[in-house]
Amino acid sequence: MGPVGADGTLPAATAADASEAEADGVQRVRVLDLGCGQGTQALRLARAGYAVTGLDGSEPMLADFARALDAEDEAVRTRVALVRGEVTEAADRFGPGAFDVVLCHGVLMYLADPGPLLDSVARVLVPGGLLSLLVRNGDATALRPGFAGDWTVAAAAFDGSGYRNRLGVDARADRREELTAQLAERGLDVEAWYGVRVLTDYAADDAPVPADPDELALLLECEERAGRTDPYRAIAALTHLMARRRSSGDSAEGG
Image (tube, helix red, strand yellow):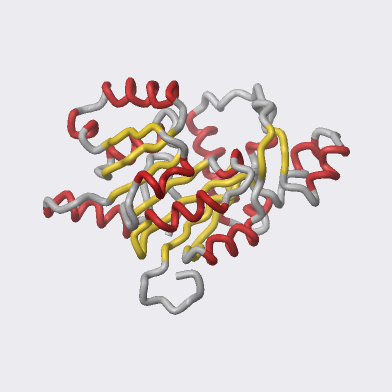
């Protein structure tokens, strides 16, 4: 199993399910993108054949998404549904087991308490469904200010969960072991995890993307390898967890 790729692909088993569903004319794999924003990931998944619902509370973001969707082929447009609402309302808007896959990328850091959202995710996922969760890595928040020589902020990061991101917004980080336990309490078992922005997070804000395709490919190769390899992945700026909703027959607590 691997993370959701840059091209919007999901782990092989899920992708195979989508292809089989399309070929047989049965229901497509249903994906909920929580905090979908302008639809970057959702559109890639829709193009790959998934049925995607995007939920976001920002009207301007959804307007951008709608404009991008208008430029797509009709087949893609029919696979996408846009819903305006807060991510914490997911359980109220959708029924139990409404989705096979839930994406929640870059959302938890803006919630003071992730518990209600995790409750919603567990509810809307079908048993055996997959959660793709991307969070700020609480085990690495001292690194960036430390490398910048901001020792006051670095010292506070060791014991705290708050940080200020590059947009100047105060946010919150999650520690992997604690988050894994929170997911398990809700019947979601982490099957794999990865580091994201392991090396490039420490580049200058104005550092250009390599213009040479070979250099860019090598950069991405290094990031991909670091994100899968200890000890590098543990100190990535972001942590990507893949968790599976327990089937009703599983005996573990929280199912």
